Image (cartoon, rainbow, N blue to C red; front, side, top):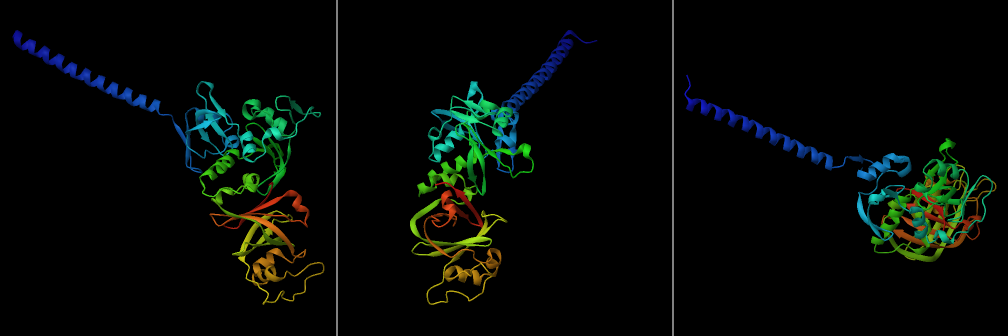
Length: 389
């Protein structure tokens, strides 16, 4: 039989053990709650290997609920704070857009259509206005522009005013890279009508304005500015990100060009160097697909031609063009015979840190001078011909 003292000690041990178990349980619950709080406080991310960027929080929600990849493209920057039209906001850049977190107002798309036109040196306010809409079109008194098919249906079915804003230009022909087609600018976007696509139901695409504007604004960090003549053309070069930073520009220098069955040659004299570009056209087109660059090593002590007899109506190239054409069988096979005589010209040219170049030819004896064509040569053989100066 236990004494009262022994019974008292057993009761104390019982309550002590119970208290230890209770405190341990509370500790586990506290730690579990804290861990759960940390998981909930950290927004889930969605990352993209294509650009090594992630999206999260309200911007991810907006991206996923409003069209995702086809509408916005991949993220091309982290979430960061920027000044947007006088306000400091969290923003994230995408290939086609800039998404802005306006707090209580929610996430909004940036006014990139208007911004791009401003960077191109042609503010939307300077475009001709309409006063009435043709049948089947809609007129916007707020911007004094008309919206017609196929852009009208796309605007109506994909977010309307909140997604695109008002139209700020009429539909018009424009080149983007080596593509030429009908486009129309809106406050927030540029729509492009790609009739070359077999799926005509999805022929309206949205321009890569986010990437374009980011590339243009990045030039501010380059020590030498972009030649002002290229302000519009640069935004239309799809491979501009491969050019690097501008180098000193050479203005109004001697040049020459010649057309061939399947391409053209361009000669430039920068004073310290003479360069020949051999450009191969796309099949059944005058749009360039690739180029080769050569130093012009011909001088008057060498034969002007190789004495070859071309087919009727065609020409053998002479002097520097002829030497490159004869000494490089692959170039000769790709270009074919010349179709026009060599034409003297003048050019503006700017090199780039990558080794590429941009140049403009007057092409005074050719119908294409009406389009003010700028040629952009990218290392690796890429070349684009874009209109706009």
